[in-house]
Image (cartoon, rainbow, N blue to C red; front, side, top):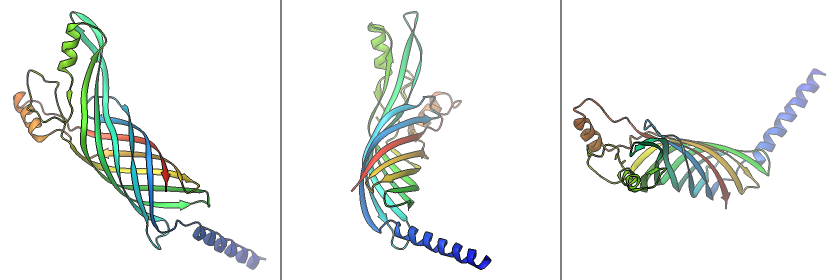
Length: 245
C-alpha cells in the first residue's frame, strides 16, 4: 500500500509538471497598449496626492527556455504632481486656496519579470526595474476661492511653468520650479485574460532630487546659509488596463 501511494504521488507530480509546461508562455515578442490612472505625490514637498492619467505602450520578450521569465520596455506619457489646500488672507479675509503641480512626463520603464499561466485563459505576472523620464510640460497653479483684483494678483503670483529654468527670486519665494530629468525604480503586478486583456497595479519610487542644483544653491545663499531645500522626489501608484497584440 505504501508503495502504491508513493507511485500515485509521483504520477500526480509528473502530471502537474507537464501541465505547467503546457501552460508556459511562448517565447518571443508581444506588444501591449495601455491606459489608466495615476495617484502621485511629491515627497518632502508638503503636497498631498493628486490623480492623473497615463497611457503608453510596451514591448515584452519572453526569453527562450526561461520558464516564463521576460524583459519589457516601453514608452509612456504620464501625469504626476501633487496638490495642497490651505487658507489665504486676502484683503483681511480668510479664503480657501489650492496649489497644484501638474507634471507631464515621457517615461521609459525597463523591467525584468516572471509570468505564470494558470491555464489557457488566465495568466499572472510581476516585474521590477528602473525607469527614466523627462518632463515635457507642466504647471504650478494657484487658485483662491473668491473674485476680485486681489485674488487675480495672488493667483498670477503663484502660477508658473513647473519646469522653467529660473533663478531663485527672494521676492517670489514660492516659485520653485523643477528640473526636467527624473529616474527611479518601479514594480508592477498584473493579470491577463484570454491572452489579450490585462489589469495592472504598479508603484514607482523616484530616486532623483528634482530640484536643480543651481536653484538649491541660490536658495541656500538667499536664506543666509540657514535653510536648505528638501530633496523632492516623485512617488506614483498606478492602475492601468492593457491590451496585448
